[in-house]
Image (cartoon, rainbow, N blue to C red; front, side, top):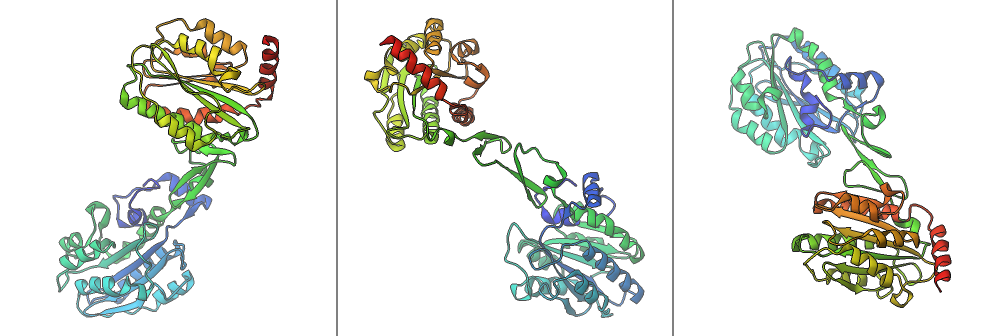
Length: 471
C-alpha cells in the first residue's frame, strides 16, 4: 500500500485483513530504519467471547491484540485504544480514555476474561456507536486528522440483527472491519464491513493463525516520514505530514503553483527605484476573454512591486495596429490606483505592430517628460500572442543598448525567435513562453523573481551615463 491514500483506516488495517494485502517494500524499509509513525486514531476492538470461543482460543485473541497495540503510537494526542468484550451481553473492558501508555493497555488486555454465553454482535456494535465512541468515553470530535476505526473479531453466527446497526456505525464515520474465524457466517461479515469489501473483510481458519497477521498489520499501519526518507520532490523545504508531506520555501522565496518549486520574492527590490513599463499586445488574436486574463496577470506583477514615490513607478502601453499610452510612469503611486487603472484598460483589437510599439517605448515611455526618472533602472515587459506585422530588430537592439532590461513574454502563437530578439541577456532569464493564457500566472511568479534578482545598481549607472551623453 502506498503512503498518503485517502482512507486512513484502510492504511491502518489493510494488511491485518488477510492474504490479499501485500507489503509495501518502502514501508518495510521505513520500519527497519525507524522512520514510521502511526496516524492518530480512535481504535476500538470488538471481540467475540461467546461459548464457541474456547478459553485457549480467547488467549490467542488477546495475544494478537497486544501485539497490534505494541505497533501503535499510543497516547492522548496519538492513538487511543478501547476494547469491547461481548457474548449475550456487552462489557466495556477498556475505554478510549482509560490507558495512555502501551504497557497499561497491554496489561489491561491480558486481564480480560471470556463471557462464554451467546453471540449478540448487533448489540455490541450498537454499544460501540452509543458508548465506546462517545466523547464521554474518550473519543475525539470527528476530524479529518483522526480516524475512527472498529475491528470486530468473531467466529459464529449472530443471534441478533447486525445489518441496520452496522450501517448506522458506518454512517456515523466509523470505518468497520470484520475478521471472521472458523465457522463464522461470511454474509454477516459483509453486512458489518465498510466498502470496499475486499479491504474490510477477511477470514482465518482458526484462532491459532490469527497472530500471523500482526506483522502485516504493523507494516500497513506504518505512516512513513517521507521527508526523512528523502522520498519527496520539494526543491527547498519538506514538511512531514502523516503519510504525506508538503513543500515550503526558504525565507525570501515563494512557493510556486506546482507545489514544489520556489521563486525569489521581489522583496529584494524594496530599496531600489525602478521604472517599469508594460508593453501589451491588444490585437484581435488575443480575444476579449484572454485580454481579461492579461490584465489580471499585469496586476499580479504589480502586487509584488514596491510601488511608491521614490521606489517602483509603473507605466502601461497597449498596442495593436496603433499604439496607445494607457498611463505614463509616475501617474499612480499606490498599488490600488495602479491596479484600478489596469482593470479599466479597454481592448483595442486589430493588428500586431510590435516594432512600432518598441519604437514608442524608446521615444516616449522612458522619456523624462513622460515621467521617467534619470539614473533609475528601466525595465520593459513586452507581452504578445502572435507574429509581429512589422520589423522589430532595430528597436529591440537599441532598447538593450540603452541599458533597458527587456523581458519578452509570449503566449499561444507568439514567435519564439522574435521573443528572443527582444529579450535581454541572458535570454533564458528574460524570455518566457506558454501555450495557454491560463498558465500566465506561473510566468508572473518567475518574472517578478527575476526583475530584481540581480543588483540594478550597475544598470542604473549605465543608463545615467548614456542619458548624460544624449543631453
